[in-house]
Length: 226
Image (cartoon, rainbow, N blue to C red; front, side, top):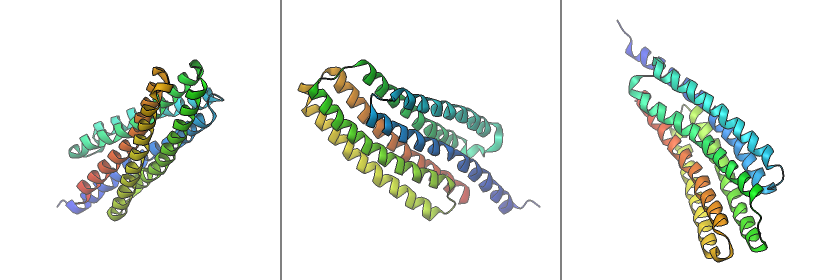
């Protein structure tokens, strides 16, 4: 006679094993976040070094993406959870892609555009705000790492709430940056405006991904434990 409770426990172990291994993504994300902060603090000094570090981490993420997707589609995961698992893997990898995009933008801008005095002040102000966003992102990624390793649903709810609060705070920072660059748009070139506006949205998107990841993990765990 088949012991369905036993089979279900095996399923939960399998799902949690994969989720736990996915925590490598936020670990890499934290390292890349720290290097993005260094880029913003030190630009244009050593930006190639930081950009190369983030590029290498993005490549590591791409390899993990391929391996995890193959594992999921090869039958290691219940077919009913496959879509959510694949979406989760893609969201995890997307964070590293956005970090690399941001590092390339910072690198390209600082190496190829010469700022005047007004532009320098506006860029410095905006970069300091971006650092605040990234500090929040590092904290949110810590909760993402926790939620991927968590087995207690009540603690996962707490992690989700913390990520939501951080995301709301970052939304306010992003809006303040955009308001600032619009108010000062007559003092900067279109290239400076586009650079700052692009980074404001791209860095804010990192927190949206963290929130999406927490929602997907919670949905998956509810499916295998209910």
